[in-house]
Length: 419
Ligand code: PLP
Image 1 (tube, rainbow, N blue to C red):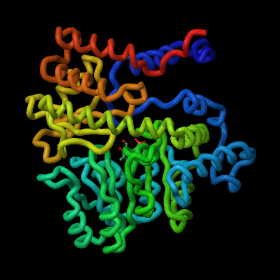
Image 2 (spheres, rainbow, N blue to C red):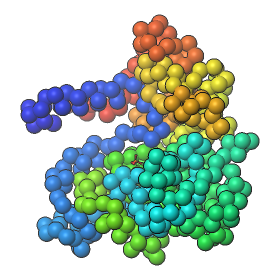
Image 3 (tube, rainbow, N blue to C red):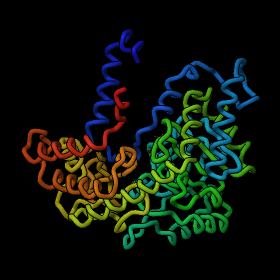
Image 4 (tube, rainbow, N blue to C red):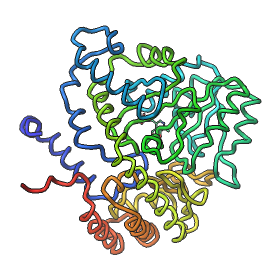
């Protein structure tokens, strides 16, 4: 950091400001986390200099002996962590991993059955502005109005009607466990590839606190930076029978040289995830999410589906008469970082939204437990119902003070103890 500070104080200053921002607020964005200093060291390494198109021991560049060892380790660790037959650790991001899965199993114009974005899916699951919606015939299932959980009968009906090439499960705002067996049975019935986009919950699978999609799915794509707590990036695990297709789809179909510093960061992270400490963390993420969701519910901010089995919950703000966009702004002013989110069957436009999404990965990394989650829920409730988007508003200032006090006991990236 000293070199950066000397050469480019402007950028160095912004890095410090961002660290301050991460330290000074309650980070409740469900897709974010705080990766370890060891992963950050791998990301900031000279591996960034190396071109390594291809795969270990079959590269298109010389000088790959060391990065081959790094990628071999990342692959072996991913396979062991997830009990997978094959792993590809090169996708630059979750969207790149998904692009490769489409490339492996579908041709433009083919039909894909996936969860709709407004019920909790992801842009890359066939949304019309994404490549996935432009290039493929996306058919969408959603949640049932009654349970607010995935409508499996609808999945089956649409699968039989449209006979998709791929059936995709997973999304960005699904608080409940997914019934992988049911999806597998539906995919088998219509001869479809069963793909799980586990970006959000793969960290809970790694920590062995929720069931794994790996034994059931043909292919599982994921990001490495959410609950998993690794570097920003993507990865894919699959059955051996699909290994060649997946590898060719990642490179050379969709990507060029892998980001070897990122691959090193993934290797470090996979090793971290295989430890009892990470498993305890994953359990903490679950416990905290549940208490946060339940307490918000008791305060009148209803959790969609009535609660959560994962790291996130989605809340309906209509009971307190505030929109998602206003709640996000009021929380932001009070030092609470979360996002507005459409809820299923939302009467508001997506940029207004009737809901918020909250997640426990970051605050759990900071060491908070269920007792703190009750406090956090109360702070959110107060900021949303009595606060304002103006940081100088009296209640907002008061809540921000309480946030600061809480964070003093649970700092993000604590300074090493003075020697
Ligand atoms: N898939 C799901 C389910 C996601 O939630 C996300 C990101 O939030 C992605 C894919 C895309 O990941 P990335 O932002 O790394 O491209």
